[in-house]
Amino acid sequence: MRDVGEARGCFIDGKWIPTAETFAVVDPATGREVGRASDATPAEARAAIGAAEGAFAEWAATPAAERGAVLRRIAAELERAADDIVSLIVAEQGKPIGQARFEVAYAGQWLEWYAEEARRTYGEIVPPPTATKRLLVQRRPLGVALAITPWNFPVAMIARKLAPALAAGCPLVVKPAEQTPLSPAAFIDAVDRAGVPAGVVNFVTASDPTRISDTLVGDPRVRKITFTGSTEVGKLLLRQSADHLARVSLELGGQAPFIVFDDADLDAATAGVIASKFQVNGQSCLCANRIFVQEGVVESFADRLTAAAGELVVGPGTDPEVAVGPLIDEAGYDKVCAHVADAVERGARVLVGGDRRQGGGLQQGYFFAPTVLGDCDDDMLVAREETFGPVAPLLTFTDEAEVVRRANDSPFGLAAYCYTRDLGRAHRVADALEFGLVGINDPLPASPVAPFGGFKESGLGREGGHDGIEAFLETKLVSIVC
Image (cartoon, rainbow, N blue to C red; front, side, top):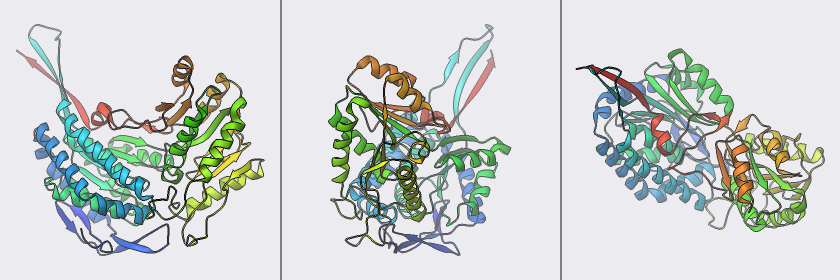
């Protein structure tokens, strides 16, 4: 692998193309520059789309088994480069090293799953309305796809989009987040070493996404856009793509309720909150954001959660003992501070944490202590907005109907969690919750083998499972008169 400080360029038509300008990538744990990335212009963006368009016909005609073999080779190259890529994730995103290793392994799971799913894009033979006709339904790749990916899972989110696109026969242009371009570039290196045909995967980075987004999103040659990020940006992309009616998949913000009933296994529920809330330092759209606890067990549960959160080690991701790294940048840190201050001003109690961690060499990074807030209510910012940080607000409820109503009282509907031993209640609550993913006694419900996506303003479409490849396919009817 090349030196981490070197800007690789943009990967276009099978070659790394240097750009006139580069930009710094900063470690959020130290504030120091850890590398540089190429700053693409609209010219590079257009070239990437052109390369993908040029590769479309041949890649679409490649047998599914061969496309699957390419994905398996990418997975193998990713595994071989795992240590280097993990180091880059830690350096530019701040993620603890154990979580970074999990991310790279998770990315490989998506590649392996869609290597097999490529074979299963079946068509149909439809019974005809007359004896002289034969009706054939085919599934055909959409065309050039654009993947815009976030900084919280800089490698896994590319794999989650690249794998079904390539399996379906669609060439791809990838634009990663400006905060974390280094580990994606290393992943594209692995794609290159796997022998992916020129133009099938292209990669552009930019310090300011608005510099190239109009070019990428507005180009009529782009037939599919898949985006993971904020609801605000997702709505903007939807508007920008409307003129040429590109197919759009959006995985957007969340405000996940985590419901603990009085019959729940409280130790399991506590472990579930820790796993969900503090993953990636709370910077995940799946994170538990509103923790509803039934009145009869709130004190016991709060004691357990406060103790567990207080034991989480905060520090740079390079330390294998660390569970909570830095927030991604100053804006993210300021938002967390504002949410905690608002809650306290409105009557919440800080049970643990609640402030910046600065001792022991942490003063240069955006470290915020794992925080549990008691006595929260639905009017506080922590209950109405996505905090995107290590803050667990506790809200109490009386009965099942009340908590379902309050959980659903949000414009977002991505993930929800429920802990109970009552099988009937589990089914009732799962059916009533207006969310795309519901984990019953399960804090980690997402999987490459199953659909992933949200209701309401949490997005459009699904990734994962058979639904994920469908997002890159068109349906064609062929009617034959015999």
